[in-house]
Amino acid sequence: MTRSRLSRLLWIGAAAILVVAALVAIAAVVGGNFSSTDGKILLTLGALLLAGATGFSGLSLLERKVVRGFGRLAIAVAGVGFVFIAVTIWTESESLARAAGTAAVTMVALLLAATNRLLVRNERFVPLWGATVAAVSMATALTIVAIWREDAGSGLGRAIAAFWILAVLGWFLVPVLQRLVKTTSDLPAERVLATLDGIDLVATTTQAESDVAVDTTAIARGEQLVLRRRPS
Image 1 (spheres, one colour):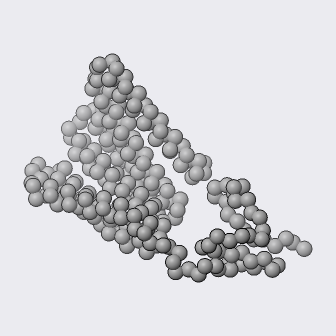
Image 2 (cartoon, helix red, strand yellow):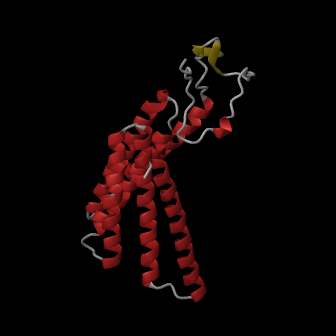
Image 3 (spheres, one colour):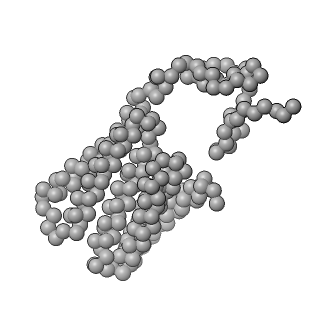
C-alpha cells in the first residue's frame, strides 16, 4: 500500500470517527439517557482520533523525509498510547490512570511538534521549530511530573502554563512569519535550469509566457516533470 493511499485511509478513518462520535452524542441527547457506556465510547473515539492524528503526522514526516526519527517516535507513541488509554477507560483502572494521562500528554506534545515541523517551508525557520520543540518538551515534562506527584503546587502549575503558552506561540509563529517573509527574495527573476536543443527550462518568479505548452493539470500527485532526449 502506498503512503498516499494510506494517508487517504487515515483521513477517511478520522472522518468516520467524528461521525460516529456525533451519532453517539445525538443518540444520548435525544434519548435523554447518557450512560457510562456512552461516555466510554466517546472517550475511546477521542483517544483514537488523537492517536490517529499523532500517527499520521509522524507518517507525514517520514514521507517528507525530515526528522524521520521523530516521525517514528510519534507513530510508536500513538499506538502504545492509545492502548493504554483505551484499557484505562474500559477497565476504569486507577492504577493505569496516570500512565494513560502521561500517554495522552505525550501524544499531544508529539502532535504539536510534528505538525509544526510539517508547516516549515523555509529552512530558515527550522531553529524556530527547534525552540518550539524545546518549549513543548519542557511543558510535557512538567505536566508529567504533576500527573505523578500527589501535590503539584501552584509554582509548578504556573510553570506548566507558561511553557504551554510558549509552545502554542511557537506553533503559530512558524506559519505566520513564513507568510511575512518572501522566500524567493534572494533569487533572481529568472534562472535557466537546463537546456536541450535550444530549449531552456526556466524557473521564474514573474508571470511569463511559455514557448512550449505544458498541461500541468495532467500531472498526478507524486509525478514530476523531466526533460529527456529522444534516442536517435
